[in-house]
Length: 439
Image 1 (cartoon, helix red, strand yellow):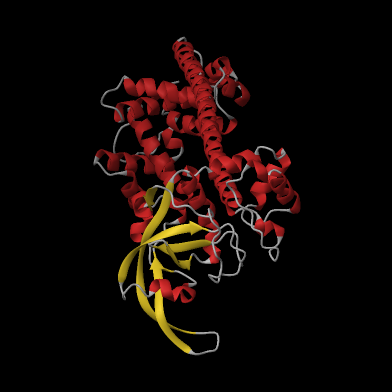
Image 2: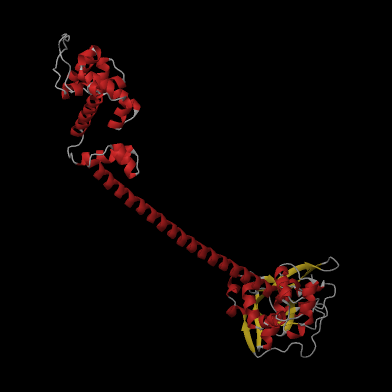
């Protein structure tokens, strides 16, 4: 931290010549309206100048750079009516010194609002003192930065930075929030003559990196923020482009999948039409399935759909037809023995599996001679009577004390007896000469 000027400095002739026009900070810096009052340091050394004013007196305060001040060549005095009354604190003076000098060079004195107030303090000998102090308002750093650009400090900074190597400029951006390396400081100092608007501190007690003009740091930080914002924008652009590319690729994949799906549907429609045509030509379900390249269950489902479509009432007529077909298949499986068909030949003929042939043979033998299995016939007749009365399968199972599979078989047998015109009522014992059902 630089020492606060004591006020002992006597300005040399020409060190500060008040410009002809006046720049009022409140007119140029919107942040002034919301800023608090700042205490002006060094007022205890300027009591004679301040004693001209009464407590609470508003005054116009002029910023006066003092590059010849031996205590701090970056000092900025605060004058009221042409007399020095205090200083900008040394921690802030570096920000104002070159800005005010640049605006002065452009022909404008820089002034702000202030107020003189009564105060007390303790002197170097710990004695209480009373007197006058000066408060003033100053702009926020954002407004001060705009004034620095208007004063030509940005152009001066850029002229020096342009002489640096690419690596030095990168290093400068990397270190601008801390302190510059010796190499960067040396490079900036080497070409300081290109930017006389930027003042280097002459305080030898400070590290060389802290003697660098503060605006070399400030503008580098601005550049870094702009660079980061540019990178962020580029990242957003790349992300947007990537999302668009992904959307295009997804659209292409969806279109390809749609084409595959449509091709499969077209193939399925062709198989459906071919299967129905082959079935209508007399081929069995299995042979149609083998020919078309689908499963047998698929062929059966297609045929069933066509039959249901042809039966607007749905349901009963269709199922009745299916039941009649099964009865016919069972009778066909038990053709007269003179045909001498093996079970394998029956499977081929009926296009069904081994278990299905066994079931068809059992049912076929019963259908041809119901009285040969009196117990099964009795259950079938009772189920037939219950069905005729409108009793559902669940109730039939309870009434006959049957399992679900046994109930299904009893209802199937009841339908078969109805289909074969077997007389209703209780069965009578079969006579020795009674002939079985015809083939």
